Length: 442
Image (cartoon, rainbow, N blue to C red):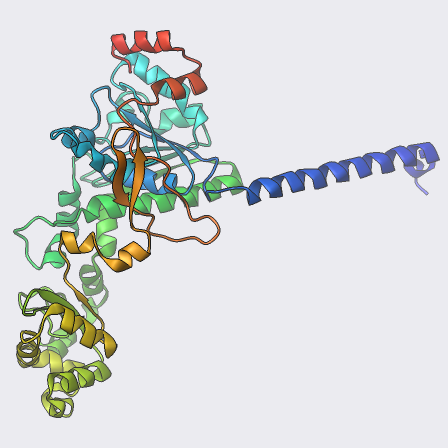
């Protein structure tokens, strides 16, 4: 026996046993409370606080997604409002559109170009888990509230920066918008098949916002494991290039590009971007509109030949396989076009779908906003608004069984939650806020 054991007494053992039992009961109680808390969570990101200094589309889309799943998002705008709000206020009532990107958020005003505004931001940041910004490169650094400075105040902060060309590289200083990101990444040319028309969908902004949200979730998991925050750099050009399949593929197959050109009758990147396109991956004109259709495989081509009423085309050497159909694409396209033009889009949609040929009517805005599939998925929903009653907005696109997320309100008015947020986190009262407002700080 060691000396420690010899010193122990029955009384000592009883005390040790009691303390061990007490500790275990506390541990079990803590686990039960934690489990109850987890089971009562409505949103997967409940408890996460986000300070959103971004504007227009990319940053707001990022914070919107976090908000939909339960994060508390405080939108920070200059006293006159951010870019999108200014656009939306050009026509009375058009501000309803703000709800497409800012539903369920809270809103405050803050002038980060004012010394007092900078100090307020520094005091606010430690109360939040995440900061999002997509301002002109260097804006926050010049104000003394860039990542390096804020990380000293709040080491576990997750700071997400979205920009046109990132924080490194020869173009990092340049201003950029969605159009610039799509143009410089190759997506604009490949998406439209032409370089002289601006894209009608803001992929550069919106997709970058989604990637930023994904990165924030990854950073939250990393912080949970290590206790450390970090800087997230989201260059929109990089995100768009990551979606430019044709450019990526061209680079990957560079060693065999000559063989590819020989087999396909042209460069790989030109297959889908020529004006006529590929007949098996194309939108065709019907009697009353257009329908998109895909028949890549030999089986699908065989079905198409039967539907067209020319089953002999299944065994025709000119169309025997994908390569021969590419080589003779003009003939394939003409045969399919003639058939398509004899029917309405609804007739084609029904026939093709019944035969398991991938297809879809090329929808305009009115058709999309009445689409039965989108309705069934809850994508054509609305949010309660204190002024307008209800405001139409998109639903939550990704469905989760246990924590589906929810939309609690329409977009907030400019500075609507100044008193709520500043009193909650900085203990400022209405009189102090009024003085700061007159001073131009908020």
